[in-house]
Image (cartoon, rainbow, N blue to C red; front, top):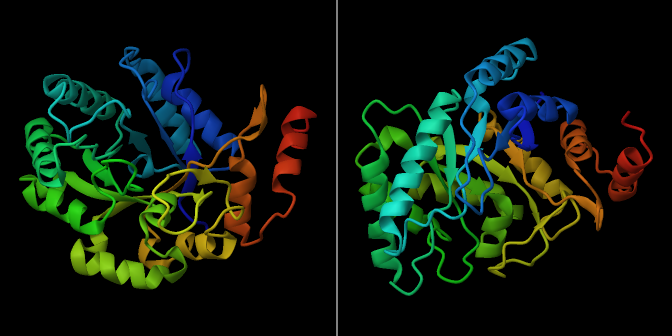
Length: 302
């Protein structure tokens, strides 16, 4: 069975979502995720409806279901801390409107960091902000991402995610994005994924998993560092990630790769074509990095 599998792709001023679709197709993906602007700043280009229509037409032609496409909210939004509260809420409202105009229904959001306020206040701040930005007629589901537990991050354990969901009034507009690297770094053993899913189901409910970020980790279990690694080259390993991608209880959930580019300096190349092939074919490529560099640098993709 071909899984719903794709990667992070770009969103440029010139081609916008059409360029995102074209990049996803170049990786032989059937879904994709993108930011509508740089994740670290507030610069946002107007959405071009003509390019959006062309993107949708191409997706229809190539059998990419728009319901499986994902937008990631910018990192600079921090709902957990009081600082810049009005900005964070306003910017998230704008981002939700942009996502709706693109016809996408899933927005992945980092819950935020409380930065010394304490976990309880951080969670309450997130709940209050989410209840303010969610509209009755809104179509976008905000997917809270599981975090690695760096610093004062909120959402590194399932109980914290559950508390946020419980406090949100519009339950149909909230979900979860599980990230395999983050979960590993937070202390959840991904090699025992069935056990993890049972725990998730008992605390939150599997039906709330709307997106899976498929990433290996440069760090051992419980490191709380959040450093992604290429598929099969980190502490999770290929077999563990393969089982997660093919897990029957997640067969209808889009899986997105956010693994690092391969190479050094200016010669860095996306790994997604090769990693997606590995996961779809169930076969680990021991020469992954060498083949990626050769494919792009030597012009074999031309």
